[in-house]
Amino acid sequence: MNVMYFAWVRERIGVPSEEVTTGAVTVADLVAELSAREERYASAFADVTALRVAVDQELTTFDAPLAGAHEVAFFPPMTGG
Amino acid sequence: MAVVVQAESFDAGAELNAFSDGAGVGAVVSFTGVVRDTDGTLAVMEIEHYPGMTERAIAGIVDDAMARWVLMDALVIHRHGTLLAGDPIMMVATKSAHRADAFAAADFLMDYLKSRAPFWKKETTADGSAWVDAKEADEDALARW
Image 1 (cartoon, each protein chain N blue to C red):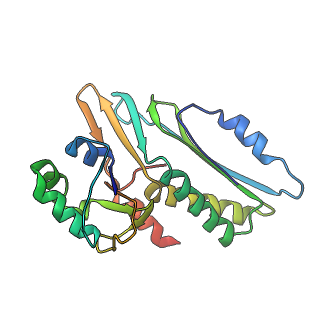
Image 2 (image 1 turned 60 degrees about the vertical axis):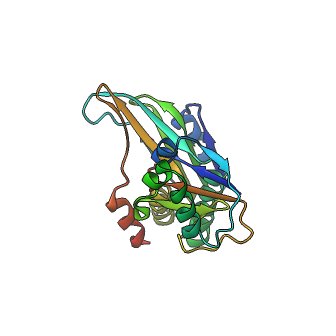
């Protein structure tokens, strides 16, 4: 699936998006899997309460299932307007 | 309804005039957000967004407003990219037969655009760059609705 990062999450991880092959069942599983890979992920995901997640462009929660998902995006709380 | 996400600037007055036309219109409410230079030190403001989700999230928010209030139309323009102090960032306009619906819907749109549309602001001053933190008050504002 395509995993995307925005704002300081993108800066900390160092790429705007990447293809990830994963068997993660939920968003939280994906976060754990990425965090175990490299320090830059662990650092970005250290406090998930400071993050938001969207699955296929819909805001959701970290316990959301990933079955059938094509795109997952991680980002800080939004500051539009 | 119209949802416009663009890097280019826009003329809020011209947009409002074009939007205000229509038979039976009794009330038009608009809000224009401008890049604020709080301490007089802002060099640039960069606005990042999530192409695709941005348009979709805003359209969903506008749909909610149209379902909730009696509106004849709604307009949202939001910019991304590099902006300078004083530049217009975004604009919301609503029109209705009566002002109560137009005011309430515009207020609702602003509250939701602030914390549910995927935009992130970064300010650069002589001291460096920093992402703007979301305010708890902005999240709390959603509870009003």
